[in-house]
Amino acid sequence: MHRTRRRARHTTALSAALMVPAMLGLAACTPAADAALAPASVVDTVPIYADVMVTADVPYPAGDGGTQLLDVCHLADVTASTINNGPRRALVLVHGGSWREGDKASTWWRSTCEWLASEGFVVFNLNYRLAPQHPYPAAISDVRAAVEWVRQPAQVAAYGYDPALIGAVGGSAGGNLVSLLGTAGEGPWDIGSRVAAVVELSAPTDLTRDGLDLGALPEGFDRIQLEYLGCSSYRSCAVAAEASPQSHADQTDPPFFIAHSVDEYIPIGHAHSLADALTEAGAPVTLVEVPGIAHSIALLGTSEATPLREEIVEFLRDELP
Image (spheres, rainbow, N blue to C red):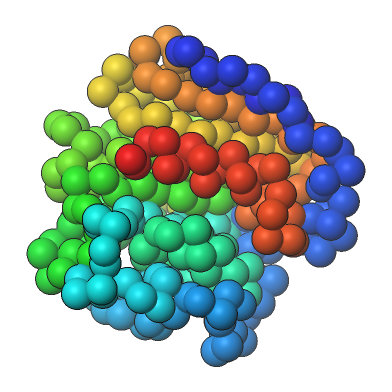
């Protein structure tokens, strides 16, 4: 693994050997295949982590005035009355699936939710409206609404976290959405839908025509992307830049942790493009380049302790102190 930390951050690399379990078990985790790993009807009802509780299918008010569902993963002792070491930190977790598929309840996203909860975070694992029935900006509107809901006193009292410090984690299309949370918001990180830290895995970050020059996309992905944008062509797609996180980068953006495989489904040029935009804007960013083809949460590997998992947890603890 090659890591580049910018603005007073250093660089490392994961070994290719680390990624063998991930590629064997999760190499099919493309944006479109994220959802296919486990259909929505196949839900882990037994927690993977014995000390983690999952409250499933909690409704939250979506961006269109309707309702979407989320799961809450947390340590079993997380209540307002039993926290002795101060409030915990909250994360929103946003699944991938090319903005048109995927579900919070799929095996790998549920596992990721529980893993982060086992590290002491209160994790809100979101569903959101999907394209093409609900094109941009439906998905990001729902994700922003979810952050605002997480920040409300009722949720804070129920799970005992600090509403001023909320982080966001997402992979593939979900990585695009959490990156938009980080770059497109305005104002301090502790209000509204702002977040204080972003972990982005394998996201397509430049959805404009220029993004096609960052590397070869799989056949048909440009059409999928246009459907998400609600456009018939890039030439006439005014919202493409709006849906691209680096278009909004500025010095008020929170710290970013970006991880991307060198030879995966989404060209690594997208990771470089976002990292460069953040660096030029004066925002802190860590870029991790991983050998191989593992995509999105496949980068995490299949064991509980891998170097990338440890780096992500360290990053979140440092930025959400």
